[in-house]
Image (cartoon, rainbow, N blue to C red):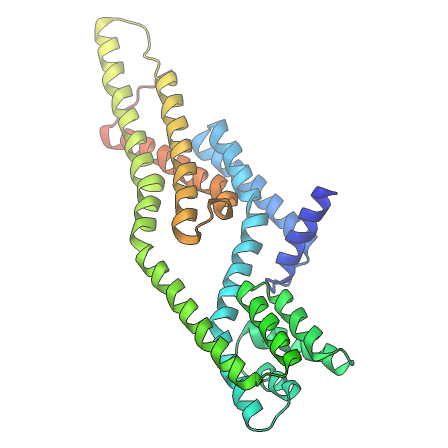
Length: 298
């Protein structure tokens, strides 16, 4: 039952993305892409850990893509909400009804918000009450800000308050909240970029290149001394483990910085690990090319 509820939740997220493919077809495309990418990684790097992580990472896009598109859609809705509320307040002050105000906003260009309101208007024309329609629209958008706004509007209407004034006040508060969110995003850009660059590019590349140098120097020394072939497998395993842990910690840290919730970025962990391992292997390949190393280390 729990698995079914998670599937239904993911499907609702996917339905809100606006993609033309059906959800089962989307899952099938992601699976085929996972197999294809895994095969390419095996051809290029011949390393089973990278191949396995690649398969899991691409497969995780079935979760990441709907959630990311949904989040972008919610952000668009919330950025347009204050202007839409001001628009509705102006219609009410001009003598229009709440239904007229909704229809006016639905026929305007407020992006996904107008689209969701137009769908709600169909239910309104079928005879459903305004309060129920507005709250259903808010639930459909997935925006917590819109849900709170709809609850306040419905309560104000039932109490007989002036809806135009209430909508104006909510619009001002929503605009201030969005401004604070944007300021937070701008202030966290540099720390987030540092985490991305250091954990996904610099550290993996340096480790990959350094292991190549260690292999080259060690092979030369063992060859000169007539010893057995150098084995760096334990060191390489330790380095890969460090890179994986670093990618996980960096992803969760980015979630804390950007959203205040590390769990929200958890589905992106496999993809972050894949990028780090690819850069690690590329660093090793470039190191071999630059120093002309033909020796192999066990």
